[in-house]
Length: 111
Length: 111
Image (cartoon, rainbow over all chains, first blue to last red; front, side):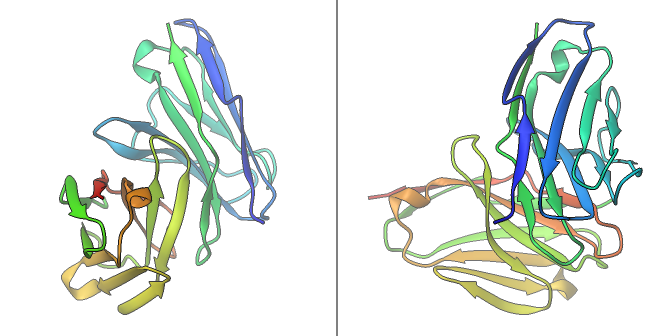
């Protein structure tokens, strides 16, 4: 069964600190995505990737970096975390004409 | 830039009655459409994926796609209280890979 695993599931970070959210998929999917979900906004795309070594900006990339070192792993990096980045973050993987599967989410609180 | 809009924002339906949700998109080259369900800010569960005009049924869930009208809908037959959740429409283009979400419809099923 398709699996997308996010870690950590919960994180409290201090303003100005560095935060790394990790995502691992065992589906051999080319595409991977990072979203954030806030009340009233649905899921908004931050970064995505077509494969190892590639990262693309989504609709709200400011303040975030992404890294895709391998087919299986896709990280979201907040170099200088701010309280406005408090949110629930979802990672997903999918092929071009296949299902897109989501992880269970990471709840990030920046204090 | 792709815009995905869902309507209504919220919907209350009696148990057993048909529930109908709507989604419009702006990019006429879109060719991948998915409906997800999310219970209380938890993970996303894919309900139906549709890639060509017409109808696609998955159990009690039926998606209708009309790309000329930039519209995709979801119909839930005989909804139950356990179907109360937020329903999210997601649209992508085979060649681009970006998966863009609407803001969601909150569905409540009255016993």
